[in-house]
Length: 110
Image 1 (cartoon, rainbow, N blue to C red):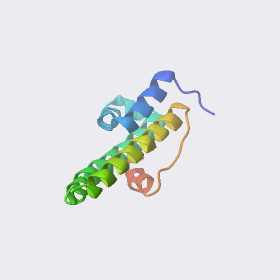
Image 2: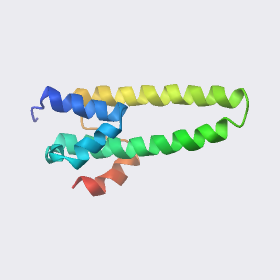
Image 3: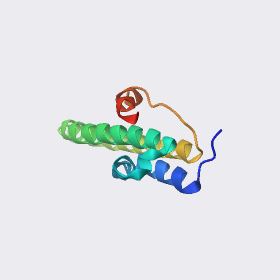
C-alpha cells in the first residue's frame, strides 16, 4: 500500500466537493501522482455531469411551482451529501469507482 501525503489526500477530497479544483489537478504537474490523477479525472467528469444536471433539472423542475422547487432542493441536498461522502472516502486514501463516471474518465487517466 502506498503512503499518501495529507496534502494530496486533502486536494483530492476537495476536488469532489469543489469540482473546478480538479482542473488544477488535471492541468498541472499534480497529475503525475497516480492517486491525484485517478481522483482528479473522476471528480472532473462527475462535476461536469453534476453541473449539467443542475442546470437542466433546475430548469425543468422549477416549472412546477411548489412541488418542483421542493424536489429540486431535496435532490441538491442529496447530491451535496454524496459529494461529501466521496470526499471523505478520498481523504482516507481509498480508490473507488463511481459507476459510469469512472468508465468515461478512465480513457484520460492513462
